[in-house]
Image (cartoon, rainbow, N blue to C red; front, side, top):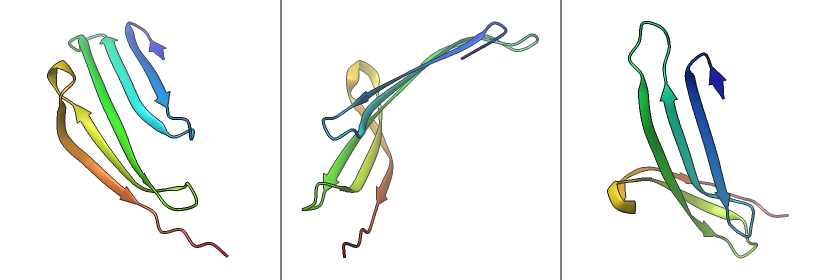
Length: 83
């Protein structure tokens, strides 16, 4: 995405099940009258799956320096019912 001098690039990596396992967002530039930015945000996603192969828990973590895990951002859980 590019608006004026501001640019945001996003990339996504997926596992063999089609679930997002990593995102990288890089922002650079800025808008008139505001300071320029140049930062990068990386997150990794870890899943737990049920017996049917569907994810029932997704943990999102922000990566720290040198690829180390930072703080855990969130945990999403799904309750699936099969008939």
